[in-house]
Image (cartoon, rainbow, N blue to C red):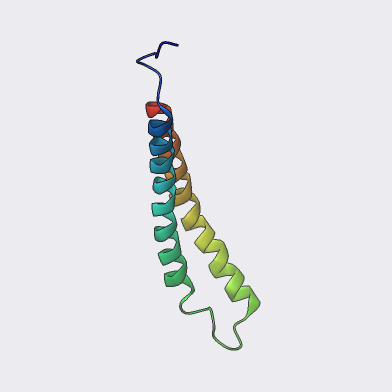
Length: 83
């Protein structure tokens, strides 16, 4: 069996996937901080109106979507370039 110099080893493949997963994980920290910041005045307060909580959540999701989309694109771009 001859080894193709262009073929990625199993160890290298695992390292590449771990890096891509790390890219996604880093975005989750940003998202968690954003959620905490946005919900600080709403979550946990007695008598919070459901409508107010839903509005904050809807606005929060508008902020989260681009962060998550950017991380996913970056991770897949990394995979495409290295695999």
